[in-house]
Image 1 (cartoon, helix red, strand yellow):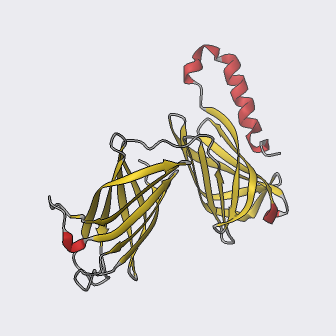
Image 2 (image 1 turned 90 degrees about the horizontal axis):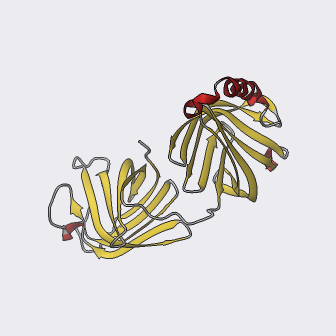
Image 3 (image 1 turned 90 degrees about the vertical axis):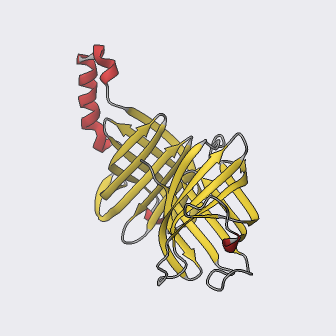
Length: 275
């Protein structure tokens, strides 16, 4: 039942192939894969062994999650999603998507946002409607290897009791097993006029099970464009982890600093920005 809405398009493509076999290089993308992993409801794990299928054809994608317990055990299909492909990886998005539940469109289940990514074998889905947030994440068949170069993550950074949306850049040097982290547009309080870029350089990292984890203690960051580290903003500890397209970070500033930064705690959770 999950593919009924694609049958007319498949029929058209079959006719197109039969009439244009010499134009194979111009054929639209077609891809299908089944994943098994965790089903989440409102951020909590609902089922540890859920089947989820990704279908891509032409310029559209669909995602089907099977045997959804909180939908009376029916399958949930999110159709008419757009995607961007890079190599074997996909970034998938959709807005105001009418769900197909048990093979029937259900206008009472409109998902305001749907986002998904397939990167190095890791398939992650998040879908929001008025009632709940549904998520899916599969187990990796092979660990993700950290890649050289910069990746950027956007999310909310909590500094003490002040929260602000920021971007954090992460640069991984695989040859030296070191990570640089740049926290952009940081403020310590809502009435603080000064906005800082805070760079913490050369933190060691390890990789296990597809997670890249880094940590350091008693490390002096670089502030804005300064060429030397500043002990006036020393971190007594900083740590973080990257898994798939998500990143978390926590840090604490040293206790013997100026009153407005002494002992400040940082907490960040964000998702990768895809160009």
